[in-house]
Image (cartoon, rainbow, N blue to C red):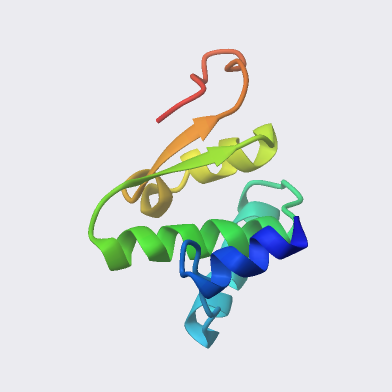
Length: 103
């Protein structure tokens, strides 16, 4: 798997994005929103990945699909207009209550 990963990097089949200071500032805002306003504990890594995905969609100037396996993360992101308007959020599983598994 390591060899395949590094081969994909070398051939630019996949590219690694650099996380900028602005990305980290936005991550901080996301963590505060989740913790303070929503009273939900969001993992830092989930916030970084989510923000980088949103930034990629903005850079490409199109909505991209962001698959999420963590219901808590999905529920938090779907409550934020900035994520809902830039990403097509898809939860890998069934919806809960009145919340559908996709936006």
